[in-house]
Length: 582
Image 1 (cartoon, rainbow, N blue to C red):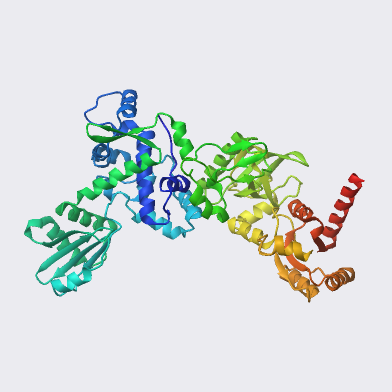
Image 2 (cartoon, one colour):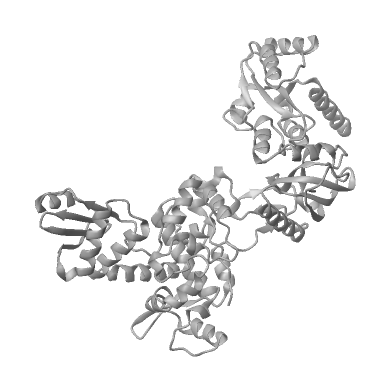
């Protein structure tokens, strides 16, 4: 019974389906639930109770039939120092108490946990800035029951009445005051219920000592010191029931989600793993995407930002019924070369982790128009477009141009090899332009890609950029184009002064091109004949097939006024189509 559950944002969100992971409390709860699932389904023998002497296989069988109570989970795992020390020997060398282990350490239980990748995934899901996510990793303690409470030290309170007045209306807070006669404390839960109200005296010797030290330190306390102080308060006022309730609710939550079974034995609630691991995968959407007749029901983990609000609500089945389906066409069959693509992704992932400046790579590439070519290039990033993964790189291309940006489709790459940069003089095996860029530290990076994509509309960023002028039929525009987002450069312009607008765009591109007399006459004729229509200006990648296909899809509702070569291309395509149907 082994199942690896990655603690990515998609899985964690499904563990707290009614909450937002952007909230620290929800994130802590999701991680606690994941830790429990990871312990039960990936390495259950680590939870073996001390009075059981079975082999690993026998213990797994016992666990499936007898189950585990929340108290056993606490005693054999969370409160067992040997187990904690063994589990966290790398992440937290002196782990002796689960409450003092930060969120990042718990996540590191995942094999090959990558902090940066997790932050990027979590940012895409919650839209929180990376700095805020990193802070949660370092300062959140999932098993510190009262860690998220507001811990206030009121060292300026002059009397008990003033302290009581300050306490009114508090929720989920620890308030500690240094009064003239000593120390006083109030503890409230999230509902505003007063859990403890005491004056600290000699009977709480350890707590009194800690408080004196704490007030001397002022407010500059580490999170661990705060948690230890809260723990002493919890123990001093017998608030342990809250911690037990936390664990009990975790088990119940997993049971309600259908990830554990529940039974009653010896007047206790026991929780059993599911013997069928496929049910776990199904409920957490860990299966491969389903395919039906040219359509795809995509895993919602790759939903776009525009779909995030919907997917967060409908990601998991509602009362066991899937209520959200995405019908998307694939340009590339996801099953074609999938093993090779996965292996290549891992190859690139490891490559980019090894060196700050990535080495070159050499591979065989099957070009649709040029056949098999050997390529030497500098890999920059993976690029997901048109339902396929591409390698954005800078170097040789299948067309034979030596140095240029090019996007290689991953399923067409074979036999990739790492080619380190030579430490000697210019090597004959590397194109001179590429070697010069390396020596001058001017190799393109992810910012270069981002700027290129933002500059012009089109997928092939190695192609030159040029302005395009379009005219949309008014009714079609109002129904389908208005308020649509095609590209940053795609914008509506006034029919007045279009010639000047185009010339200014060329100047912005540092392009000396001048509009011909014929181009100017066509623009004036169209704006005079169709003043009611909508005119759009965009910067596009020349000879970009995807742009041509988009223009074809708009059909007679759009006219390319400029540039003339694109206008001619559309005229020839339309004429060829007409000839075929005559």
